[in-house]
Length: 337
Image 1 (tube, rainbow, N blue to C red):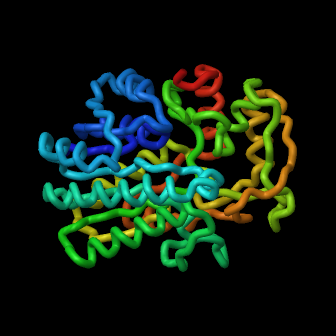
Image 2 (cartoon, rainbow, N blue to C red):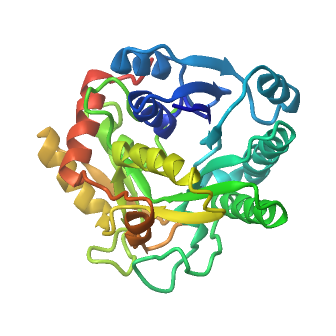
């Protein structure tokens, strides 16, 4: 058992990872500024696991609060989820994304260094591959970004690489997520976006349950099978389990390494709409509108490196994603509210 600091642990991926960490016997401390998450998610984590979750409301940009936290606790590793994460919003609010994501991570690393904690699992993103020249995307592909959100993740990856090159005592795993979807099978935790969802599945869910009139499909003229964007959707529980494997890998002192966490194939927006309609028995009206700035046509992973080196691969498919996502939406029509 080890003591893990989870930043952004009240969020969608963070809360699901907390369940897996607790079930595996780790001791957690969660921090979150609750700007785009709910404290209720952690009481649901307690319900699922039957264990208490220690929480402090801290913003990672607050260096003083972080230092006080590390003065009071000794952590074996940090799993760093805290960050703003909407592609479209990042194009409108680039400074907020750089301030929150980059400055916040810099603060976190300075605090970790000062307290001799040098094990870090970082939530990165497939957006660091920009618009890839070919598919599937492997970890050794050239890196670039088509939007400020992706660029903030890429800057952090480069910063963490420099940190390890300067001090080899650091062990850092960069987990490049593809598109998380679904919810915990209990229906107690799931994705609860503020306002109109940025991610596809919660948007479809809210149309299915009648909260939103119709789905806006951004772009119908991409070079894909039906003209809509293709993404690699991964069940959030599979993604959460990837963090457990990453923690185990840190014990081998791997240095600084990147891993794709994806299923390895893509589904179009309209395929997802059809799958959700089948699972929910509801009609999903949609309208095709202009492309969003910063979006690309297709994106899916070569996840073989994670299978070889972490012993991780996705076990749940599209049917489970839409089933569990719809279960969460039906049980929580207003999210955690």
